[in-house]
Image (cartoon, rainbow, N blue to C red; front, side, top):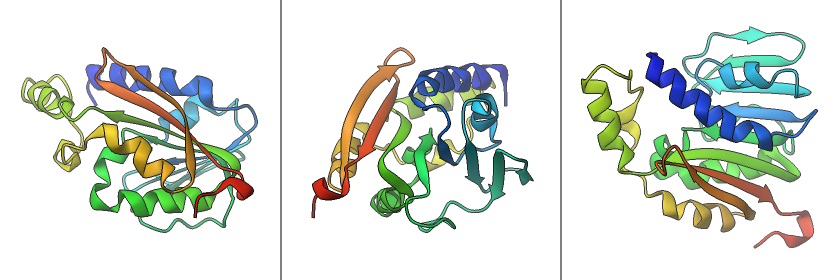
Length: 188
């Protein structure tokens, strides 16, 4: 990664970190190198990161699992207080709805999912920055010009409540916080 990649990533992390509760169990999907979990390690009880490029690692608090991001994750129901997808949701293509269902399964009652999603016009900016060799532009080709405004509808139809939607990075990125509805309030 280049310097600008790190600046943008750390800005994204700084937006998300305040929403991660103390002593939680967290799953970071698509966390690349596990750097977000390493950043919040002292705040959490246990953290897992799944990514096809990550170097496997395990200690008393963290476990990095090298695995393709799939429709089914190797954890039992209601395993996590928090699930994060930081600059990942726009890569999921037509399988977004299946992933949201799996996230719902994995979250404990009242658990939250935190995601950051760039606006679709960011792809053009990223391509230019990549051509100028200012960023690495990791997996830009997978973005599929995702329309971020549809994100709340995808999650609320699967039993989540939108708690926060905030633009950041000069309005080019979006932070979403969704809460899993309690069992007696789930939509059918």
